[in-house]
Length: 96
Image (cartoon, rainbow, N blue to C red):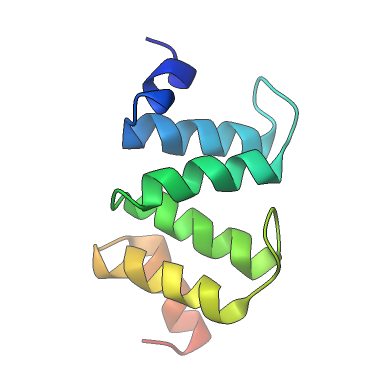
């Protein structure tokens, strides 16, 4: 099953993968707005990788207006699930 079809069917991992493909321009043109769309859907299902990615998108203002508070909120959600990169990011930011 393709990432597109699985993502459309609500599979969180496929939504994350499709978001990453759009963010990085893998096999398609780079599109931060589409990346955010798919990350948000997956993050809403509790996917820690997508929550961390949403945090990075808000931190950098890619596909969304830059918003440090919103970035930290998403990163904290990922860290609460044991996402190591999110936990490291919070420590660097002095938020944990």
